[in-house]
Amino acid sequence: MVNCVHVLHLEDDNDDAELYHLLLGRITDQYGGPHLEFTWASSVDEAMRLAEEQDFDAVLCDYQVGDETGIDFLAWFRQRHAHLPFIFLTGHGDEMVAREAFMGGATDYFVKDTGLMGPERLYNALIRHTKHHENGRRKKMFKDTLDHMRTQSLSLLESLNDAVCVIDLATHRVLYANETAIRTFNGRFIGARCHEAMHGAQEPCGSCKMQQVSSRNDFMHYERYNELRDRHFRVIDKRITWIDGTEAVFK
Image (cartoon, rainbow, N blue to C red):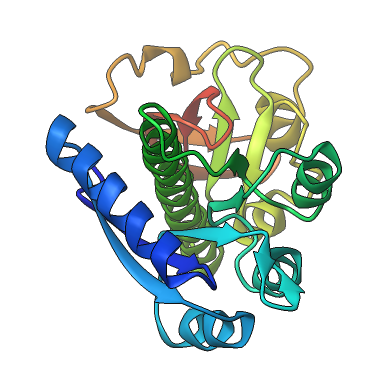
């Protein structure tokens, strides 16, 4: 939940900046929504300095800033913040300006309007785009964390001296095998059926116990003789959901 949105506001007209801060503040008070905290910059150079010194949730930018345009700042900003909400304001509607802004990576575009609905639409856009960006950021962080955990888990499995493999419950195909498993059974593993890779059999083993692992909380311990290796193996089976969502057995 976004409670406060820190906005970098690039506007060379001090009166316009103060008016918008006042009007948007009233919208916040009226609807009890997230608070907007503004940091004002009156030039592109100042906005660049502030953007390097502080973290912002969104940018509100006038199109014409002195002898420069907000497009100059947008191009610089997008090289550093590819997805942060960036909303343009302009004194008059101009399709060419809007097209230039969107092609440059602007998130939204509004004509300056201090009437009844103008500030409300702008406020809603700031909150909506900020929430969308924050949700995307959190999803990416969660995905990156999961990817890191998976990488660490696979690295741990590769370091084990025990043979480890993951087998698709429905097809009996091997989804994963660590180096120890590949060396132990001296054969092609990934994509092969487990009875082919481990036992050299064309059909599933009659004594296969994988389907008996019905609960994710249960471990099945047993001993199994392997004809190819002419030795007995102690086996532990556990039902899992693999990385791609496949119902599988960790063996």
